[in-house]
Image (cartoon, rainbow, N blue to C red; front, side, top):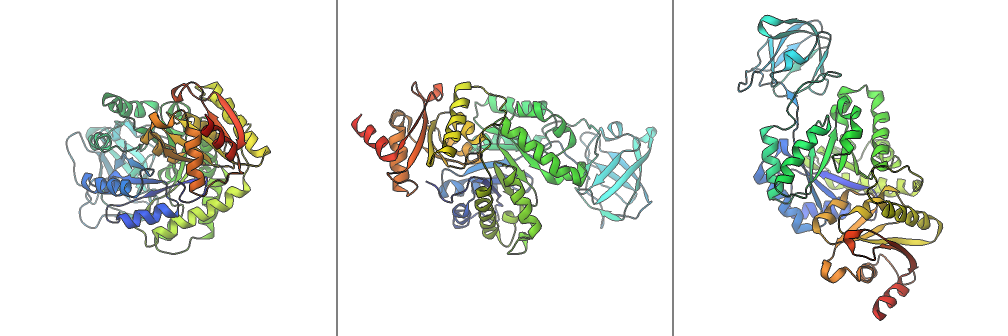
Length: 483
């Protein structure tokens, strides 16, 4: 039931160039919980291969696919790129709808028709994750051109990212390619869609409309990677399943020293809202080419765990790195060590509560698990709500959950400390405790004399939790046999 014991979940980015069954099984055995597919670097055929192989390894591995979202990029740059030195001037123009003009030596084109109207004089235009900075010095209305000055040396290449910190640019929330991938995700039973550059709730509502039109259970993860997303986090949390703190673009938009402060605030808000939170970008970046992480990277991963993030993510380390298995193993090792140093957060001020009874039972269960020699918490769930409430208090003891829907089992792969397993509802409903305890004893996770807490419902799984029971495994098993 449990492949690697840790509370913090691991998301690993997988490329279709390296997604063989044995490879995925090795990552799973080392602690990977969720497979991420980057739609910007995959085809439908390649993505389907990744999903199929994941299912062969284990039904409990969740799949997450990124959309590109409302991003701005340079068009194709002819030749070897546009080389600039400090003080050079360059014209910047937006492509009109339906056209895609190549950039040349003195004219840079971007794939946004509103760029001229939205970007004011004095704005900073950051290219290629901030490698090159331009300052808008004036605007030429006659040909819709921004005249910009370079503040540093660099070369502008094709299809590089564009960021304009502090400026709202009117972009559609979904590209045609995003819509294609959302429908593909529905057709292929993907568990999560991580939408890039979420700015407001409207960006999420547009996706949810598509999901609802096809009666899809897919959950939306909002990627927070600009100042607007940070500013609107409260309304965004109302319309998403969880968030990803995508520190790459966020680090371009915000001052570097602000990133750890923002990360901590976002994690806290997610915990209070019972929403999974993923910390992403360059967590073990050096392990793309090195078998060992830097001390700074270890501290970065540890900091996310100290902050009590639900999940930590690997990108290039597992998608194209030389040491992907070692990278997952490193994350698992750090998690196991740091989790011994943190305490439950029982007194957290929870918001967005949609079942007060479940919330109070979950709080009481985690509190009891700290005061008594409890080995584990046992629960069943139809929607995943009870497990997510238990996860919110960040207990030190594992939460073993029986799910009556396979997609709910995989959704809980993003929840802190939750180990979910599927059970047929007609068989499992009335005797879930017995089924779970027998499985856990067989797997060596529990012994007959261990003390456990059971959180369950007396009126059916769909009506939520209604009781908490504390007992030894052997007593609960014997009671179920008698009944």
